[in-house]
Length: 185
Image (tube, rainbow, N blue to C red; front, side, top):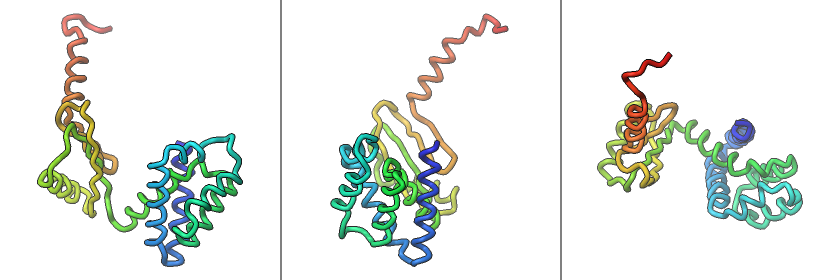
């Protein structure tokens, strides 16, 4: 919870600065690069989260990785993050910035988890349903989880639709555990 608040505050302030300088699109691309780099490199994530590695080393790593690849404003922001010793939250800040930026552009993010990959017709149908309900453009992020057995779990905004077989099986197990003939007092 604290991580989300910290990330949200930094992301909002960076978006405000980017909008003020009219470079929000460039900073958005930079944040996608930063989030993707940290997400794809587990060792880098561990380095940023480590309290043992000092801030100067982390700052040097950031400069070595991102120097010349990102905007000056984003680079200065990363410098502030490391000076304030908030590099622990860097991936969350980048992801939060991406979400806030998309929300400001009227793009809703929907997450669908299925047991097998979905085809294009189902993808379009789901996007249409979410677009109708939210009134925004929709970006669909897909995940495959074989443990669902069948069905899907769709999340967008504050809503979740769980039609997975695994949830139905769990519900049946719970119902069978209850003894309908013995009263609970």
